[in-house]
Image 1 (cartoon, rainbow, N blue to C red):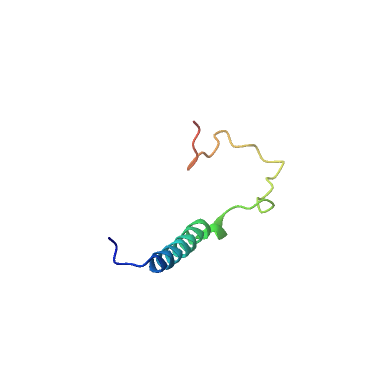
Image 2 (image 1 turned 135 degrees about the vertical axis):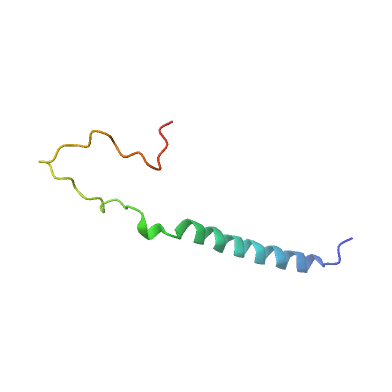
Length: 62
């Protein structure tokens, strides 16, 4: 049998779930200030030619 009471198990579960939520939130938002948001993209000059080879670094084409 477990040496913990049901109340202690519930309290430990609550603490672990709260810490996991904080960790997941941090992982999602860490570095998000470097993301390109809608409306932040620069508009290319219409007088310049388009790139002949698209930049696909970090993207999956599959």
